[in-house]
Every structure is written in structure tokens, then in C-alpha cells.
Image 1 (tube, rainbow, N blue to C red):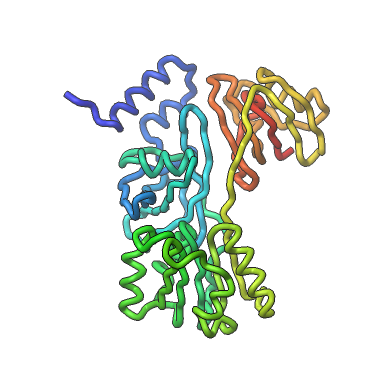
Image 2: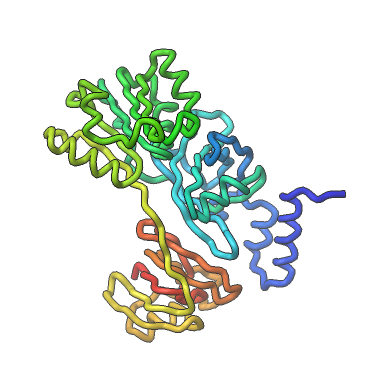
Amino acid sequence: MSITAPLRDRVARIAELVATPLVPADYLDLISPLRAGAALRGRVVAVHPETRDAVTLLIRPGRGWRSHTAGQYIRVAVDVDGVRYWRAYSLTSAPRTDGCISITVKAIPDGKVSNHLVRRARAGMLLEMDRATGDFVLPAAPPAKVLFVTAGSGITPVMGMLRNHLDALVDVVVVHSAPTGQDVIFGGELRRLAAAGRIRLIEQHTDADGMLSAADLGTLVADLSEREVWACGPTGLLTAVEDHLDSLGRADHLHTERFRAAVVVTGDGGAVTFTKSGTTVATDGGTALLDAGEAAGVLMPSGCRMGICFGCVVPLREGAVRDLRNGALTTAAEGDGVLIQTCVSAAAGPCHIDL
């Protein structure tokens, strides 16, 4: 008799708990990981392919979830080869009565998390997650004329806006760039909206048409100077759009969401920078951040000093740390705001602590 993946994962978790000192929350997490009061998690309930390298994950969030505004994103934590990575993905959900939300992930070359989610995510998978954040959203009273300029997975927050606010939008133009028509995420849905007259869709297929330039916008969208613009995609495209609208005197009518490449150096020990105090100290891989900070004269919050009370939790601004109890790595890039316990975490490369 074969064992399903969710059951196999549960058995492995039980085995891990048997061999690890427990606190009451461990038992509750095993029985009810989505309960109120637990760390915010979500369970993947379905995986929908979008293109050859993109999928939508339908997620049922735990009871600590709060509502979001279309265009915002959430960060999710994924363990890949023993390292915990946090990555941000835009919410793409249409209004739902079952409380589920969705994110859409595009695999990028050498992207550990994106490739893991696109190739290996399955129904039943648990994700640690944060609440929604971000200001790449429409105003309460949307402008009469809107232009969305996107490339690649930059369409994801825009699709969230279209699915939730299309009835409030009067005149919408979507300019989207992708290598081919088959690579357009949500291509079928966007084309149906265009065929129904709900949006004007302009596709730029770069394999055949070349890269989309900001100068093209004036030709593609004749009334560009009359539109409020939301743009999301690679940095090069957004910089070009910003420069072009600035030349038209329309810089204050542009809203952007930039992608960020997260490159984190890991190792054994490293320089720890306590950003608020301006203190930097070199540590080895066996010294807890709490001890290192106190030795350097940094005022460190603390409690049990055993990893139980969570009195020492602070944000890891960027870098990598290793859990001294089990060797697990946690990484963060600027803006992630990952929380760590300094009493049971040591530097695993250069890192910046928000203290």
C-alpha cells in the first residue's frame, strides 16, 4: 500500500518531534497547524498551471489571516535543501466565498524557491506566511483612464486588481511583454476580457517583436499623457518608464512595483551588524547572536535564553543565520523583515539585525 505525500510528511514530522524536546505548541502545531494563535500558515489546496513555467497556488490561510487589498503581496517561507527561504509573491485572487487566496509563481533561472514551488508544490503542502502588505494598489476612487504596463510575472498584481476592481474601472489599457503568446501568464483570461471589451490588451512578444521600450508607449497608447499608470516588472523596464513619464511631466502619475533579486551569502559565522546601534561584531558559527550582541554592549531583549519564551525575537534585516538547535538556515534580503530568535541563532555569513 502506498503512502500519500501529506501522510508521509506527517509521519516524518511525528518522528522529528519524538526525537526533539517539545513544548505544548509543538503538539498543537502537529494537530492543528492552521489554528488561531499559531504562526500564520496556509495550506495549499490546489495547484493550477498557468504557463510552462508558472503556476497559481490556491491557499487556505490559517485563522490569523486578515483581508488584503488587490495588488498587495505576501511573503511565504519555503524549506529547500535544509534552508528556509522567504520570498514575496503578489496575491492574484478573485473574490471567493471559501476564504482561500491565491499567489502566482513564475520559475526564474536558478531561483531556488520559485522552481521548488512551480515544480514540486502539491495540494496539502503547508507554507509559513506573513500578512499582506504593499501599496501598489488602486485608490478608493479609481481614475477614469488607467494604463497597466507589465512584463513577465509583473502581470500578477495587476491581475489581482482586474479581478477585484474591473467593474469600477472605466477605461483600461494593459500593455504586457512576454517572450511568446504562450508565455503570457493569464493570457487566456486577459484575451477574453479584451474580446468582451472590458480592457484594451496590447501584447509585446519579445521573441518576435523585440523588447518593449518606454518610447513605444507613446505610439501604442496615444492618450498616454491622460492616464494614471501602474507598472510592474524588471528594473530596466521600470526605470525606462519612469524616465519617459518624467520627460512628459507625468512622473507623479506613475506607480511602480519593482522586482528584487535576493542574493544572500552563507557560511560559518560572519560579521553581525546591529543596525540601530551602529555596532558590528565578528562572530563564529557557534556563538548565539544574543551573546554576541550583549558582549558588544548592544541592548538585547531576552527571556528564557533557551528558545522557548520568544522574548528575544527581532527582525533579521538581511543575511543568514543558523539555528543552533538543529542547524537549519534562515535567510533574508532587505525588506523581508524575517523574525528570528537571537538566543538560539548564530551568524551563518554576514547579517544585519534590526537592533
